Amino acid sequence: MKDIFENDRYMMVDRLVRDGYIKSEKVKQAMLRVPRHLFVPENVRRLAYEDTPLPIGFGQTISAPHMVALMCELADLEIGMNVLEVGTGSGYHAAVIAEIIAPIDVEKRKWGHVFTIERIPELAKFARENLTTAGYSERVTVIVGDGTRGYAEKSPYDRIIVTAAAPSIPKPLIDQLKVGGKLIIPVGDRFLQYLYVVEKKSEQEVSSKAMIPCLFVPLIGEHGWKDAIESYERNYF
Ligand code: SAM
Image (cartoon, rainbow, N blue to C red; front, side, top):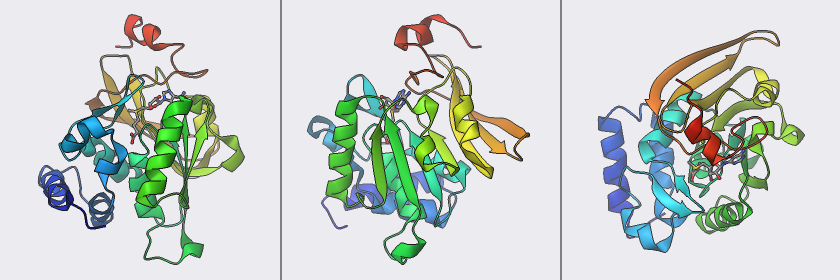
């Protein structure tokens, strides 16, 4: 999509490639295609292509582009996959995933789908509007709910990507992964987490590997933090 931010978007992607966050052509193309400025509120639009999280209201943020790139690379997404994202926020990360698993230049019957779940109804509405404006409504479904319980209706998933920080890995997410599937999730407390890649090797065997330190807003729900305060007060490390 040609727009007045195109040059800024190319420069942002160039930097992410140079800094080693983008490694594959598919993530590069996806991040070149998704117009991040359509996923942020008007008052921060001029900052849309800075590599930083930005406020989207309700105390929440759109993640920094380098984190979106890194999580997509770790997830090793392929065309046709069934993906669950927990923490829709603005809808931007879901759109980047959709560009990889259901690219517009591939026949629709080969498309995968992104189910993304958000606990704050107003943000789910914001994301739905952004995704429609940017052309992703056929490839992404936004659900309002507690994503720590997963979304059993459309499981099992090839990949689950969690974009808020959990105190531990929610069991329903492991249960809803396919054997051979991967879960990418930040685990820790309010001030420090590690990004984990969890692989379901068989119905009985799961492996997990901490990749890098990171900082996300808390994952609040039945299998997450009870509320934001608890994530401040209870140390994980
Ligand atoms: N992926 C988002 C984007 O592209 O804009 C950024 C997500 S923001 C860092 C984390 C989001 O997770 C917030 O919108 C927050 O409301 C949501 N969240 C927190 N706990 C949740 C839960 N249990 N279920 C679903 N969403 C949750």
